[in-house]
Amino acid sequence: MYTPNSNIILPADPDTIIWKYIDLSKFLDLLLAKKMFMSRSDKFEDQYEGTFSEPTYEEIKKIAIDKPEFIDFYKSHRKNVVISSWHINEYESFAMWQIFTKNNEGLAIQSTLGRLQKALESEDRIQQYIGEVNYIDYKKEHIPFDDFFFPFLFKRKSFQYEKEIRVISDVTPLNLSVNDGIKIHIDIHELIEKIYIHPKSENWYKKLVLELMNRLDFGFEIEKSDLESDILI
Image 1 (cartoon, rainbow, N blue to C red):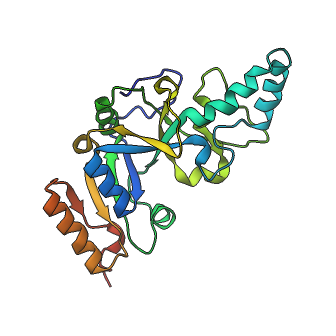
Image 2 (cartoon, helix red, strand yellow):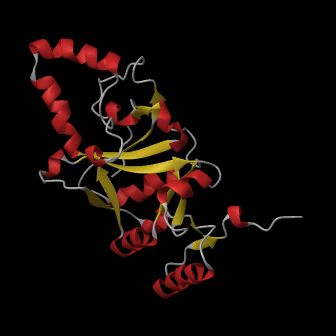
Image 3 (cartoon, rainbow, N blue to C red):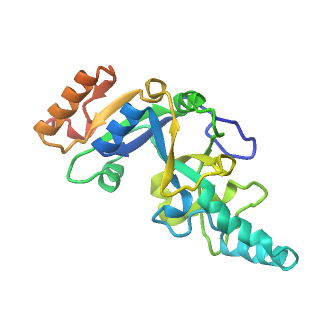
């Protein structure tokens, strides 16, 4: 279930709008399984994921002189931390469509921070924490390490276009071998407020999505993308 953490920064407004851009197969897997996939932190494309900035690493090396297991713990810990990434934005993002979908196909789930928190209450095996990602200069700025999740809530400034909020879990208590990630239980009706179809998708694709939603009888509100609105001249 979702567990508040006073150390982790989070937008104060529960109505903060968040998005996830995914392909149709992953969306259907979410609906049918009623489980949300969380990726293993060291499997992300960014090799710095879950690591430290240079000033912080220099500080950790000093600690490791007397406690050599300190660095080893952080290295192994990355394999047990799983993440689900969401995008904070009041509106659709053209860039997110481009990055996270292919061939002009895909969907965007619109939710809110409050809905996400409530949706996670159906998972009782492990605790989930939600935090907003900080974008810093890894050569100059410090990443605190008094909380095990802090390294996973900082990224390089090159990624600040992501405007990311994250669901983070430590699966160590489950005592399992995590390959690419795990799936956790989630209340999809609480999670999903609206669905948007890729603005550049073909008509057959839009009809397919509408027919699937109708046959599966989930009753989600499907919105026309603002990016495909008719021009006024």
